[in-house]
Image (tube, rainbow, N blue to C red; front, side, top):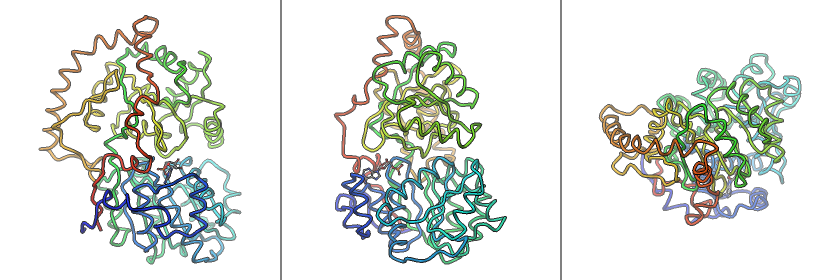
Length: 477
Ligand code: AMP
């Protein structure tokens, strides 16, 4: 792949008007209040309009949905193809039902002045209305892979006239075991098509997928999953596991908490925590994979509207879900996959806002905390001041999530060991601070909660900061 330009070199020059989008879309973008395209939009929109296949390395919060929805709506608007019955012009695959529904919502928002036809094909919902929705053909299907395959097998959906395919959150689809299903779906698509693959990380299986199904793709990388955005004030509290519930109630009862997501590792854990918070008089509900689709939708709608202010979730809600004004994310339990930490905390500080992420870490979770710190390249502490691991090798977005080479791994571990020595010495004080009911602890909690505005000094325009720490990242083709 040949280096052509850096994101930094290009995106300062561009406005939405410069990207070649139809007037109906420019109007919709302006109605949404967007003034400047984000770096991924600057890169992806012209490449998609030029008909290129694309591999996009970007996490949620960068404006990636509009980056692919706007050009595909542009093409639908220009080409005015009438989709054959049971067919769609564009297929978008997403890992979770919530993300699929959210993408469809974005299509309706950006397509409000052209009214494209959209069908959402997801599990957990009745098949009848889905079958009726696609019977006469639609412009766009947004689907999760399992249900789409079911409909393809029963002859209700055909993909032989689909000309554009978007695979969103590729690495999460991989984590959820969808790779065989995706390969089966891809095999049914016409060879002549445009394909875009988006993923926050680029593990080998995703590279292989791109190699097998994309044609000379432009590779566009705008943010590193390993570097959580700067607007999130990240803190850790060392707490005994038995004290976690009490600490959580104290944290979430504070006036600074407008809207919060609490993450647990298990579905049962999410239910238990939610019940405990309800008993403490807090407005909360749980969302996880054991809930029916209609329950999940109701809960999410209540959280979005503000009727419920605290959502207790497993990692299913960690990616893709875009709810404005989440002021706090609390990791009630640390994730055992360090990348999930980055996705979880990315639920706050969206669209240019600031946020606070607090992790409750008991002694069994210290190893997980070290893995997270190694991934993000910083030590986390109670004050929220990140201490960078200065000499640690930088991890590129293209390799984040890939197994590291032995040599690099050794180097990282030795940094982690040095760092471990220091943080272990400081822990007893922090743990006693965290005990609920003690005055010093309450002062500590107030400090811990901070405000979502603590880091305002470093505020930048959303479009600029959405490029994460990867300013100057090369774009290859
Ligand atoms: P995404 O990365 O697609 O999940 O988008 C994150 C958030 O950014 C969404 O709430 C979008 O509405 C918002 N957004 C997308 N593009 C822009 C833009 N150019 N300017 C301001 N906000 C945007």
